[in-house]
Each structure stands twice: as C-alpha cells, then as structure tokens.
Image (cartoon, rainbow, N blue to C red; front, side, top):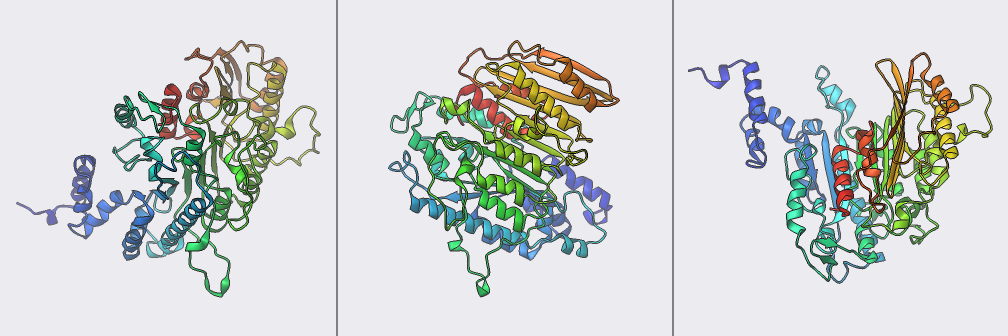
Length: 549
C-alpha cells in the first residue's frame, strides 16, 4: 500500500483541507496546532489557519513576539487580530464610583505600553521585505490585516454590569459568532434571568445601574497616551510609534465601552498605520450628555480637567483635528457610529442631542478621497452638505472639489423628525442632491434617523441601469418628495430613468419610549457598512430588551 509520501501534492492538499473543514473547535480546540507539528509541509498548511485569527492580551505579547520573530512568515498568515488591553481591576467598594486620577493615569500608562509593544512586534513584517523574500508568491490577504482594538477591566462584568461580552472567551467561544451569535445570548439569558443582587442594582434579572456605576464602566475620560512605561529613545528624541505595514484595517468595537482618545488615534494614523484602508469607529455617547471626544484636546502631560455637561456636544477639537490633519492618505472606507442606549443614557441624551456643526463640515472636507463613508449620530447630514444648502453662497464654477471615488454614503440627521415641518427636510434632501452631482461614482446614498417612537430614511440607489428614489417614514410624510426636489435628483441620475417610491414605515413597536433606530437600521441597504454583523446583532438584542448585554 503506497505511503503518504508518494501521493501527489494535490491529494495532500485535498486531504488537509478536509481535516480543516471537519474540525470542530469546541470539541478539539487545539487539534490544528497539533497537526502543524507533524512536518514542515503540514506546519505551513495548518499555520495558515491557526494564525489567521488571533486574540492577544498584553500578557501574551512576549510569547507572541518570540513565535513570530522565529518565523516572520507567520505574520503573513494573520488576517484578524483582536488586541484587548486589561485595565486595573476593582472591587465592590469602587464599582459604583468613577475612577480616580491615580487609576486613570495607571490605566493610560498600561494601555500605552501594551499598544507600543504590539506595534513593535507587528512592525517586523514589512511589505517590501515580504516581496523581496517571495517575489513570485502572491496569496490573497498576505499583506492585509484587520486590527480590533479594545480596552476594559475584567471587573466590568462582575459587579453592576454582567455583560458577557466582556468576559473571557467572547467573541471566540463559538467557531463563527458573526454567523451564529444567538447561542451566546441564550446562554447569557439563562445566567441572569433570575439574578437578584440588591447591592449591585439587580432585581429578578433586570439591572438598574446608578450614574456612578456607569461612569466606572465608561472611565473618567477616553484612554489617552502616557509613555511612563516606555523606554526613552536615545538622544531624547520624541517617541514615535513604529511603522506597521501589515495593518490595513482598524476597528474599535462598540462592545468595549472605554473610549480611545483622538490623541491616540491621530498618532497611530500619522506615525504607524500608514497603509490603513479601513477604519471603523463605534464609540459610545457620554453617560451624562456629552460626547467622548469632547474630553480629548491636549497631550497626556497637559490634559485639561473636563467634566461631562450640557456644553459638550457631538464633536471636539480633537476629533476635528484628526479628521482634517491625521487621516491616512490611503484610507478608502470610513465608518463612524456614536451609540446610545436606554439603560445607560438619560432620555434627553437619546433624542434631541445638539451636534457640533463643524464636525460635519470637517468630515465633508476630509472625505473627498473615500469610496465608502457612513457616519451615524455623530454628525448631522445637513452640516455635511452645508455648502449646497439653498441660500448658501455659490462658489465659482469648477472650484468645488468632487468626491470622485465615493460609491456608498450613509448619514443621519435629526432633521428627519415627525415633529419638524417638511420644509427643512426638503432643504436637506435638495442639498444632498446638489452634492451628489459631484459624486460621479455614486451608487447608493441613504440619509436616515430613528428616535423615540419613530424612524425614517431617504434612499437614492442605482441598480441594473435604473435609479430609484425612496422616502419611507413611520408618520404621514407623503408630500416630502415634491417635484422640485425630484428634479434635482433627476440631474444626479443623468440618462438613467428615475423611479420614485413613497412608503409607510412598517412600525414594529407602538411604544413611544422605544427608539426605533434599530428598526430603521434593518431597512437600510448599507446596514452592513454602518455596523458589522456582530454589532448589528448586539444593537437589535439590546433594543428589544432595554439592556446592554
């Protein structure tokens, strides 16, 4: 009987692919790693799978660095890296109080040191070095990687909040949570359904957190940079993050409540992630009334003391500066989302929050080279289109910069509200149409909103040579698409026929205390760009149960 060695390489590959296909990580979580130790050929094959998606904490960095230093080819296999930074633990005496200054600075120092060490390791892989070593080898994903960056304390899920998404193993407990997240939520519901813990605010499976506990979860301010744990460079040169060619995507997920400051992001973009093509930033609204980014203005050595308050709105000097001055030149896909939740936020901060107009204008200026842009609840679409509004001074012909590559655009606007007259809504949609005439590659635009008891969206889409204009809302808004507005969008469609649709929103809830932005999000064609699969499932689950986990 012929041995394994005499079989053709094609048979080897087919056999090993069957092993990977039939592997059950729940029953045999380390089996593929064992196969990789059989021989050199098997190691190369199975490490393409075992190194494809990794979860790393700061405590893992020394061993991770040693593994990839011995064979940098392993970094080439890496396509998804979840880097979760552990912040200081706390006990019951502190769980309902905001963190103090000492804890805050300690957390920032730990976060900065961990991020620095990770970037040092990832910088070992360079695109030019890979091409030199393997000039004829071109594999899909060899020079791309999505970095998921998050930070939290392991105590966050052990006191007032029992969010299982902050516990060890999530989202890696199941083989493909992005496709089958329901199992994790069923297990969570079984765990907390009868929980009663009066000290921590739980009664028969329901949580009623106090403001101090919320501030503990979110942190006193977004994490900034504190280099006290990083060795000083020679000649007292400024500390610069190492350049990392491997990372082409960065995601800051909503499942981690701690904000990451714009000083951190700006330095990453400017010094390290120069090949970034995708950036997804899902941030949480401040638990009083402010927005996270209003708290980040200076450097870690000279940060002003700022408290949440009604003066803080939807943007900041730091965020505007990041958009205008520090976004990577290669960036093609930008997804911004500022989330809020009935359990965490005051009713007044869920709807009616003022938004800083300058952030929308900065986003319009910095987005001219993008292919995809979604910005939800962090900017107002009317500010993004401000230079196209009726009555705005018109620049001379040819001076307006076009969005040459923009194919997909989704924005929110509080103007889409049943309590407001139709005039401002029509002005917004006309301005959007005027701007769309400078978007020659546009395939799909959606402007939407959802609030307490209502939801609506406007859509322009081209499919199979036909352009369609859709207005759908949960109230009687059938007269919004007037002839003058439609005429503007006919110029956008050009030679394509334009169909117009007006529909009533299928309300799934008559409760005026429930925000329908989740229901509106379900209707959008760009929902997969606005939030990824896992985040959308989280939003739907939380909205249906008025909870956070």
